[in-house]
Amino acid sequence: MADPTAPLCERFAVADVDSHIIEPADLWTSRIDPKWGDLIPHVRFHERRQEDYWYVGDQKLYGVGAFAQARWPEYPPSHPPSLDEAFEPALDAKARLAYNDSVGVHYQVLYPNILGFHSHVFLNHMPHELATQCVQAYNDWLVEWCEADPARLIPMMMLPFWDIDASVAEMTRAHQLGHKGVLFAARYDKVGLPRLVDDYWEPLLGQAQEMGLSMNFHVGFLNNPEDLKGAVDQSKKMDFTRESSLVLLGNAQNVAEVVLSGVCERYPDLAFVSVENGAGWLPFLGESMDWQWLNVGAHKDYPDRLLPSEYMRRQIYGMYWFEQESIQRVVHEMEDNLMFETDFPHATSLSPGPASESPSPRDVIERSLGGLDDAVVAKVLQGTATKLYQLEPPAR
Image 1: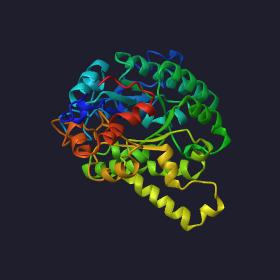
Image 2 (image 1 turned 120 degrees about the horizontal axis):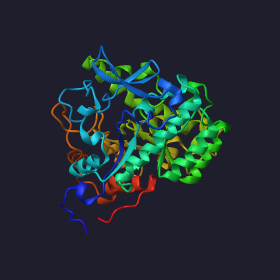
Image 3 (image 1 turned 180 degrees about the horizontal axis):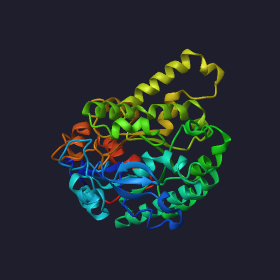
Image 4 (image 1 turned 90 degrees about the vertical axis):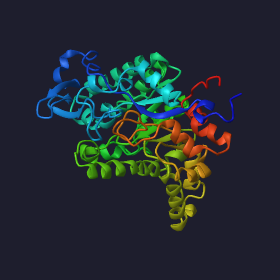
């Protein structure tokens, strides 16, 4: 029996449900047929910027350390110019586990950077055959990375979303490898594909529901370069602050899409997760959609439908990291739908360091959840994540 006076991160196996790996420079060049040449994602030195950059052909992506600001001695958007200069736990799985122990994290759900924030490149700047091979290579590599402790390091699969048959096949394959959820988007119509409510997606969404896999809407996924430019590349700190704050509101559109288009109605056992977008806006969105639904008489046109907020409580999940006061309303209204994250090792993460004002995950957990009923805290920190991602709770 845990000591009721002990810190929360010692009483519960804390699940950090949004963190990131930093892709090694040879991830794709070591696994993809060299016949594709420099279309394979690769790293080369950028003379003008004096740092290593990811490239696909001549298409410049991001610096290799652009998402590895944890413990970096300068404030964002400054970042390590090479992987050798990045904080080791951002790169190495065993070092990550040791670091997680030091900050009170047990489980950690893992998302990509290059594949996630540059999905438009894989869609538009390389043959789909190669793009699909890149997705498969990433999924393979991530499972291997998690072998340091597969009970604690939780891989999330990427899919070749441009090909529905290949996506269904890759979901099956990646799930068999050990992936616990799917990195996905709600508005594929923005890139010329059918909306999620279309029968086109039935094989994929139906299979995910049968497998018990959640569909995870990560901030920035499927955004075009201009959407993210200010949040990553601009040197002016006011621009960086504005863009990196506004991008966090993007998932409101995704949640509204699956709730109001009929996707949640069609797949009642399929979970949708808003990743790295905060959670304080979730009750407002639910209340707003309810108001509009009733005010326009939609409940009379669709008498068999639930209120939008009821679909949210049934199938929509969110998470928080920096919020403290605003999270209280979410806990009060959606205690079964809320989880905790750190976003390690991104610029906005809970990563105390020489150029960060961030408290540690331990401190944020105490400030935001301290004093709440243990049953509620257990859901937020551990229980909901272990159910959603099919994890085995450790003995504590």
